[in-house]
Length: 117
Image 1 (spheres, rainbow, N blue to C red):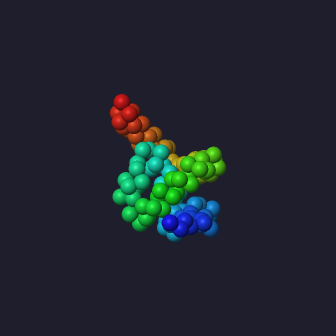
Image 2 (image 1 turned 90 degrees about the horizontal axis):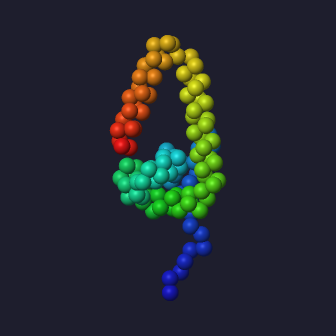
Image 3 (image 1 turned 120 degrees about the vertical axis):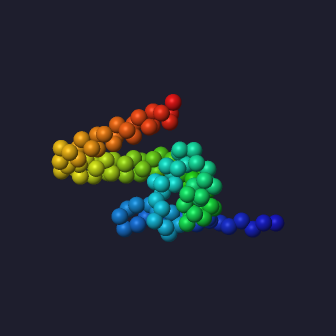
């Protein structure tokens, strides 16, 4: 008979800034879950982030699926904080920098539309 472990170690740690990282690496939970939500398989994520053990990627995705509401709230807070930082930073831009950013955003949006049909 197989002896089953009582617990499985979750390969997630919260760093000193409150960011959840995977497997003692610099790779964030946000990154792994974003890849997963874009349709990447655990194997594809591993190819992109070979520092992450494949079994840890599966464990992170399983944990995300089991705690989706809580982790989605964490991910939303991070996105909101990042957006606020971006806005604060861009508030000090010159007119030329704002015009350049507007052109880049327009090009990115056009590429997204082309990709999505």
